[in-house]
Length: 85
Image 1 (cartoon, rainbow, N blue to C red):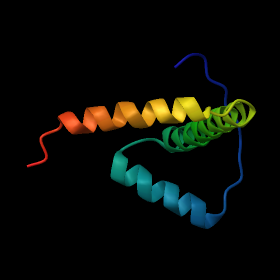
Image 2: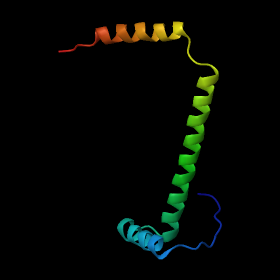
Image 3: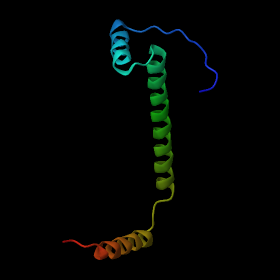
């Protein structure tokens, strides 16, 4: 991890209690647990943005009828090769 900066935050007693429980279970520091939680939130936000971008692109240029037919034929061909016993 590169250079780090310190910040001060206020937490409810319930949240701090949860962090302490996790700290004891994982052996991590408070900072590590909070950092991991924030990283997860940032990753989820990035993932949601990528999904939204994909959906917008699909709406702008949806698949054509010919592409759908081609996909169906390819799937049928592949499935016909599978041993179903």
